[in-house]
Image (cartoon, rainbow, N blue to C red; front, side, top):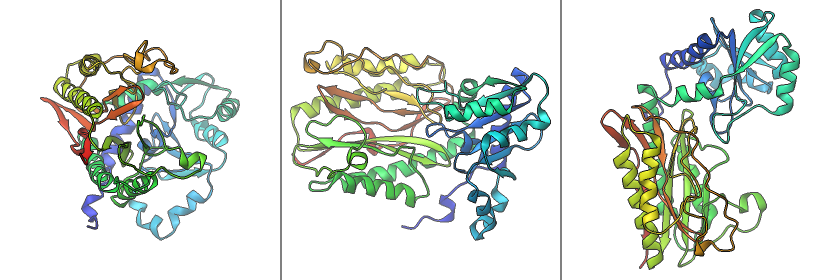
Length: 412
């Protein structure tokens, strides 16, 4: 079925103004003349504020007036003048697009605002997540050299926290992204059959996300198969070699990143070819942890209370937990602890096992927050991971995916 125009919603100008206001509220509190925002592959702050994907995009938001969009890719400016660019002219959020060396253009954009000791915010130095930061070290040195009269203030973390609660419009877009993820999960289940290659499954899922107008979060879907199979990225795409072929007894698991309009959802698909008691034990524990998370999520509950309830189900089955069982998405700011119940286990003897990685802080859940539930139960290096997108609502939580929240068994 070909998607219709109504299936491709776009954030409104009102949503744009709300996002710019989030930045300006922090600027007012910190007495900042402007903010310079960089995006990374994980938070895409540049897209969030610009409403479009510009290679290496930098957004300069002044205290008053219109923001400036900067890119080092010269051809980007000309894209606004071809046929497609003209058709999108009325939808552009930022009219002032400048192209050239970003450090010099940033200094130029700030020139009317600068004074001796001027304070300017920066988003993108890191601190918003373990993967945060979108400014290369050399570029940051050049920016500082070009703006010697500026006192830079890192506001990445407060801005990321302000983004955690989604507006009604963002909630609608998040649901849309989750629907794309549900369709991608169905395609995964259809493509994951004995004799198929990992590359066949990967291609089918990414094609469906793209066909529906979505995109994947970088560096792309996480996919691994085998017997036993751990969780991790593809190896054949980077190292070369033949993509694995699915065999009897294998499992194949994936972390699908279904995104739309810069909002990220995640779906954790797992397919097992042939039943065995070990798989059932892992599958039951993962599903019990998912249900415990759903039961715990509601406004006013602490993040730690949710993941503690999920951990308890997996630990009760004498299994261990590697990835976070829950994390915030759009942006990915908070992760639950990792490598839980892994230390000193007989089934992990001889493996390089780190200490528990603690959670990225604690906070109170509020209506409008979005999460990826992704409980993984492990025995040795065999993993079953399931889960999907969740939205906190006034009376609890709204599950936005179904297929990925249960493991799938093919054959007996």
